[in-house]
Amino acid sequence: MAYEMKEKAGPNDEVTVVNLGNTYSFVPSNPWVAVGWRDRKDISVDLTAIFDKRGIELRPEGARRVVPEENRIELNDGSSIDYDYLILATGPELAFDEIEGLGPDANTQSVCHIDHAEKAKDAFEQLVRAPGPVVIGAVQGASCFGPAYEFAFIVETALRRARKRDQVPMTFVTPEPYIGHLGLDGVGDTKGLLESAMRERHIKWITNARVTRVEPGKMFVEEVDESGATRAEHELPFAYSMMLPAFRGVPAVAGIEGLTNPRGFVTIDKYQRNARFPNVFGIGVGVAIPPVGQTPLPVGVPKTGFMIESMVTATAANIAALLRGEQPGAVATWNAVCLADFGDEGIAFVAQPQIPPRNVNWSSSGKWVHAAKVGFEKYFLRKVRQGKADTVYENLVLDVLGIKKLKEIHIEPAG
Image (cartoon, rainbow, N blue to C red; front, top):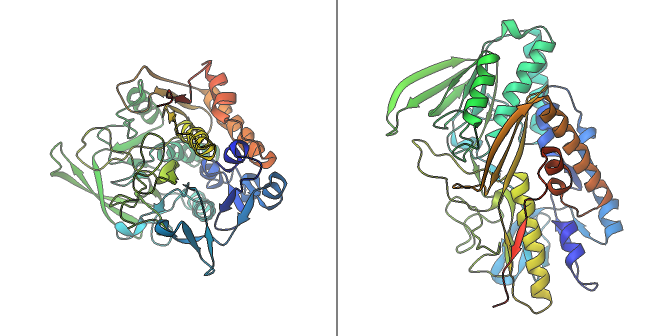
């Protein structure tokens, strides 16, 4: 977002990034870190010199609170900065506290942050030394299911390579109404592909699963029916567990009337801007998107990489238009292009648009997906290190998939 905004802004406009620290870490590689296939240094970038070269100011103090009525951000060190336009690209707060015993400070692992992934790696090494049952998945209210599936298959692959798979029963636990729902009501045959992959790898699953609490070495799960009533209760023992939490808005914006919804996510219009504070824009996981239909348990809609790049491009174009005294007209198309890595192969899917009904509804699997995911990682990190604003999915992923063009944004006629 910073690179595209700098590219679109005028020569006298100032672009400032407020971040907690000066390091960027490539989150999609965290599952590889958690099994020892990557180190922190492999997927982290110090932004200081790069931003300086691009003429982007970096404020590593982090944001404590946004004060939109005053066009001001309070930083964690007590200072403040003013803005003319604000882009909220915060990502989520991880709601581990909503379930007793959940999270890396309690009884389950996480791959949501590089610190969590490193802790998960230590726990995985212990699992290899002392094999036992594994429980992986996501809890009710989660909206990012792809990494849960990825990690289950990556752990399965890593255990096979360690010659310990035969000693490790595996169970996948998810609030989705069926395997492969992904918060999108499925894409192509993701249900069939993922169920088949799990059967082939001897991974059992529980859908419509509500995690009620987690104790050391034991997870308590209620399996519900279509009405949400409990139809079965499970006590799942585990030697290792990784469960993705539900998300909510970050404290810097949560509870600001007119800016966020009750869950703390930023409300936006089709131009990515907030209705009450039209000089505030939102992109990424921190924005509010309604769920796809009703499900027995809360299942959120994921904000995928291609979708977020579409938001970024539209936001940069719209703020640039406002800086020129024009009206915003760029609208993100919110397509989904995903590569789910299994460690040695994987599943890819394309949804255009992301939310059904769709013009494109395609999925496929094979070893090429793993290779494409590695290429995506290398490409994206090089882009960050070089300070380039090109769109990764347009230049790499879609070429791999053989898709010539999925238009990222459309521009509405003036007026």
